[in-house]
Image (tube, rainbow, N blue to C red; front, side, top):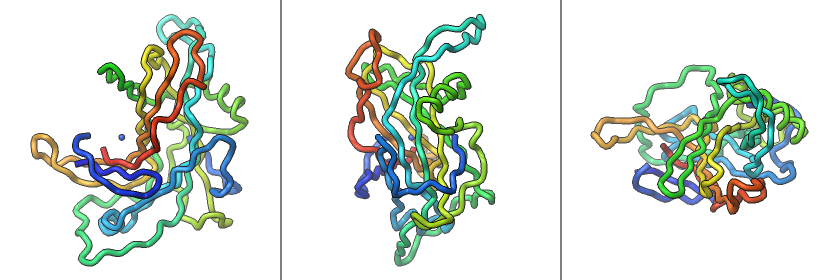
Length: 251
């Protein structure tokens, strides 16, 4: 059983189955042009099972692509490629306190302190049973081009690894943002449906029984589906559109 939570805060079940720099001047209330806000959400059960629980407020822009001259890892020669990317910001705000009678006993291992921010992203091609998986990559040439285009100082998923910012109230002087970019290379241009899974924006985990009845640990994950209306010819980022709302799931 996998739990899904959409950005409106509703909870339901589904069977089967998701670089930052710190800026002290960023404010969660200031949504930058084109950003989508996906608010933090934690159920009563989640808060009862993890006393040190944190979930980030996430702001991200639509999926974009940028043409970049990249080096071929085999030949060393450069060729023009489209790099797909998502830039985003995260805020570790204090969660609304929720209580539950007879809370569940936390049987999960305590995380190491200080907790580390380790973002990861998977882009999965889902149409026509392709099920191709692309992991977020560190692409220096693309990162420079993206920062120039987005007028930011985003860091890769590797460069950002470090302690989680302290929890704060929205808009307070102590509020800090993590800002970063996920990048993908070699995304299939013939596909038209994709799903992105983002982890690292919460430390919430749960234990479930796997297909062989052995326990497995699932992480709280952001899932967003995309639909692309074009083909491999004249590729245009405007063709990539959101398919439904982002959701919190466990996978």
